Every structure is written in structure tokens, then in C-alpha cells.
Image (tube, rainbow, N blue to C red; front, side, top):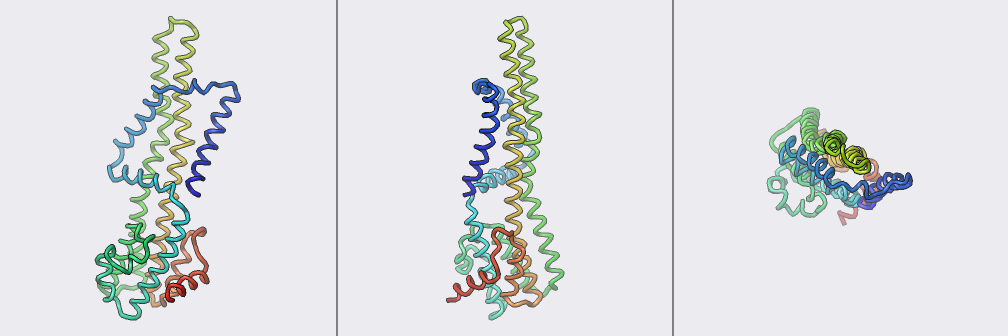
Length: 288
């Protein structure tokens, strides 16, 4: 569904921009200027390589692929996360924190975590759960202090994840400038042919202006929307961390597993947040 939505958006933008151009008697072949594309896209990619670390570049590619992920998977993730946290807290309530030792030390080898495959697909989330349960097992901490520590960690994670969208945003802002760079190069070439036929001069000027067109199109129709979508993807990931934070803080404050899980449910994003009754049904079906 999300993949189709993104394709629809790209198709709508292209249809309106290039369709309107053709309605004004423009010829699409005139926009095909490979040299301008090489200059603009090469400068854009090169600037990203220069201005960002390898980690940020890899994260940028990963998040771009993530934009096409199904929303159904995110709904299943919310379901499994709430069920996992209830299961872990219930085990703690019955047997104490020591029962989690082997599972939080190696969560990817744990049969408990393996029961929730959608959660296991999110390494940041799995490590966040394991690390903070380990911290609880190491000694007593007040709910206020614990929540403050978790909030600081979430802010640090969010800042790291947002570096990719910020990098794409900066490149998007520079695209019109790269377009002007290509256009100036085209004007220089035009000046070299001032003694030629008027039609030839017009072709060179048009080719130069295509550079500006490509730069503006790339900025406002491709790079900026993609950067915004990546930032939204990060906020969705952070909402799951906030969910865990709320659950663990409620647990430290002495709430029952069900009430602690409900505290986490409340901070999930609206489109994936289940009702309290739905969570009860999930837990009941798991217990059968």
C-alpha cells in the first residue's frame, strides 16, 4: 500500500509538471540533456559523500528502502511489542529479574524474543529493551531517574537516525544551486558559439536553462519530499522506543504488567495504536 502511494505521488508530480509543459507546446525531447544531468546529479551525490560519514550514507540508503515498507508490518510490530513487554514483565512479576539474565544478555538467541519476529527485525528496539532491562537488574532506581535516563537515550538515538534525512534535506536545498551551476556552464558554451546561426545559439541557451529546471525539480519534487518522509519514518521508530520507555517506567513505579503495557500503548502513533480492549484480546489469545 505504501509502495503504491509513493509511486502514485511520483506519477502525479511527473504528470502535472511534464504534462503542463507539453500543454504549453513544449517538447519533452528538449528536456533530455544528459550533460546537465551528469553535472547536477554528480554534484549532488559528490556533496553527500564529502559532507557525510559512511554510516550516515548507509543509513540514508536503508531509510530510503524503508519508505516502501508495508504499514501492515508496523501494525504487527506494535502488536508484538506490547505482547513481548507484557510477557517479560509478567515473568519478572512471577520469578524476579534474575529470570531474564540469559535472555537480555543474548536477545537474538533467546527463545522468548524469537516468538516475536517483527520486533526482532528492529535491532535498535531489541537492544533498547535488553539494555534497559539489564540496567533494572543491576540495582534499584527510582521511576523518575529511570525515565530521565531513557529520555536522554531516546533523544540521542533520534538525533543519530535523523542525520540521514538532514543530509538529504541539505542536498535537496543545494539542488537549485547545482542547477544554476549547470546553467552557467551552458551559458559559457553558448558564448563560444555567438558567431554561429541564431537557431544553434537558441538550442544552447535552452539546454542551459534545462539545468535550472532539473535542479528545482529535484529539490522540491524529489529530494525534499523524500527527506521529509525519512524524518517521519524516524519518528515512527522513536514512538516504539517511547512505548518501551513508558512501559518500563510504569513497571518501576509499581504498576501491574497490564497497566504498564497500557501506559506504553497510549504513546504509540494514532494509526497503529490499538484500543485497550484490543490489547486485552491479544493477551488473552496469547495465554490460551
